Each structure stands twice: as structure tokens, then as C-alpha cells.
Image (cartoon, rainbow, N blue to C red):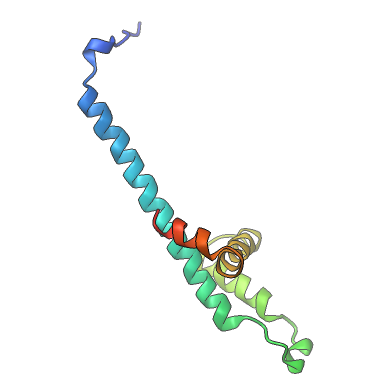
Length: 105
């Protein structure tokens, strides 16, 4: 029913080109993800709650507001957005060298 392709039937150059295309697409995807997390980190830096005494009485704190804003921008749930914000903050504050490598794809 199915014919098996022998090694002699395949084009090694075409296979290598396909693998290269996969690798390039993955690097581009990783770089895009790094840019997204960097932008979320930028927004976090703008909205990061300070030690402002007035903010203690807010119905929603700055972090929760940021998560909702990111969720709306990404079109995802709050839980998923919170994970993205947490990753962005971690890369920015604790793992800047990892963030730099991630940005290269």
C-alpha cells in the first residue's frame, strides 16, 4: 500500500536545506519570543508598583492590572499572561545574560 523510499531516492541537499530552514525558523521564533518578553518587561518597568502608600488601597494593584493588560494584548487568559509576565520579569531582573542569548534566537 505504501512504498518505502530508499536512501538512494532521497536528495541529501534537499534534506539539508529543509533542516536549515527548520533551524532558521526556530531561531526567528525564539528571537520573536524574546522581543515579546522584553516588551512585557518594558511595560512592567513602567507599571511596576512602587512603595507608594496610596497604592495599598487600590482595588487592583499594579501587577494585577499589568497581567490583565498583557492578557488583552496577547489574547490569552490571565493565568497564561501571568506566566509571561513572570518570565519577562525574571529574565529582566535575575537572568539578563540568558535574555541576551535568547534575543539572538
